[in-house]
Length: 361
Image (cartoon, rainbow, N blue to C red; front, top):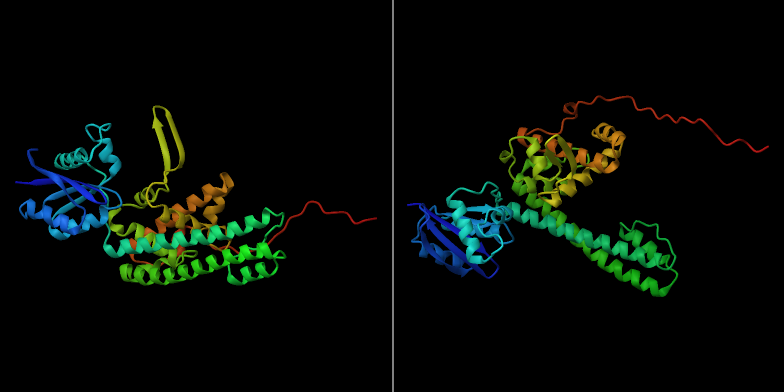
């Protein structure tokens, strides 16, 4: 007899529902959301190995699925949006009904969007990258707040404030002691955050090497792809074999354009922005390097830029960059500029002028 189990996991309590292969209710109830609670559930179900367990995607999903697999269950993390869309009574939500819908849908094989669960090391790498992003945003917020203080007084601050030396020069040039005190406060916070970012950069590098080995260094052979961009892409994709072609990688990262195809009308809109925002933003940041004429992806940037605008050109370059990185990962090769369908040309700097200012007199 095959047993199916549905879990509605929350921070404190988990509601469960169990059915057999014919849909007969076997068990129902709730347990504590902890390792001990899952062990209690395992004993309640008779210690049967390989029981199929369904649970919604969410904050608790990854670690819960890992604990369940360790106990002998067969967990499936299902997209929460699909669970809600296929529920029998979407306007009558309750924990027990959600557990029943998950269990019954798993038994009838209704769900198609099952979430990939990465390893614990990859999840920790993702957490480090998210934390680093949080601190970087804090640094940017302090720079913006400092410049806002001076703009409010009619003083224009042109410094980028990207280094400690720039901050100290900025503070020394501040004439008013009141505002100088405020800027020093922002500088102390910025300095502390920058130190944390440096520590996280080191941890990200060490963990990325442990998770992906030489692939991490291979990704950095692409011009404009640094340690953080490489680690972010690898942690988001985690396993390249789960994608059959590069177009699926683009869709997974949310870089593919949205489409409305109905009747005789086909309309393309902005990118879907599904999936990891970290991976998407890092690829777009790396794509900024294609503005430089010496960059190998510069011809693709200029071709799109001539027809559309800067933002669309950046997205197109980010798409191509994702395709290249996935293909390098699959084939186990370093970056090869000869595969980009481009040829080198002789660099000549020419300036054409049709008018000039006439000399006085």
